[in-house]
Length: 214
Image 1 (tube, rainbow, N blue to C red):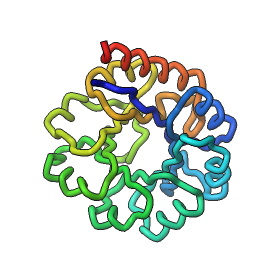
Image 2 (image 1 turned 90 degrees about the vertical axis):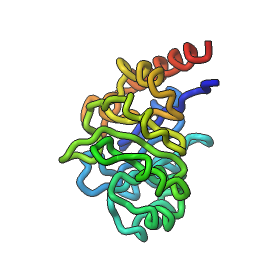
Image 3 (image 1 turned 180 degrees about the horizontal axis):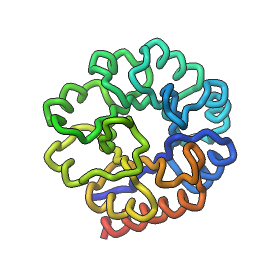
Image 4 (image 1 turned 180 degrees about the vertical axis):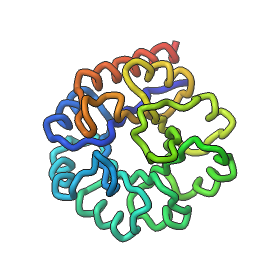
């Protein structure tokens, strides 16, 4: 039976917007530490945001091929609940990360069951995102969701890639993911979230869930 799809909003930077999306009902927020991201957040700012989160709302740090010592130190310092790895991090790298790992896979040629299987024991969840040769995330473009059926992931699926209030319901009905990850589709500028669009996306997700339970 289909349960409730969790909702994460990534690329958060502003405390008032964090408070607004938490009030809207998100399950997790993403804080991006990747150096070249327009949504990058500084450690002190991230630490303050995490300290202000209520219980049961998770903080996920987003990293891209950064030294493992840096990832673990930022996770400890900021109080992160999990880390999301967007680069070419190996299974051995993932095993050395102290918080729980969400391993990101971009839907590019060559991604197959064998690639995923190498991470089954070191990742708590798999996040699938749109492939773009010049961007590691935040493309604003969805991928062909039906491609996931052939991969048959063994870990909980988090669906990303161009999700917004207009298509998140269809994405949930097509994929039945454990969670969806919203970013550019609920922004009015990079790193600036529109609480009204977040509320609408959550409402659309809830309606999709209700339909799947009938």
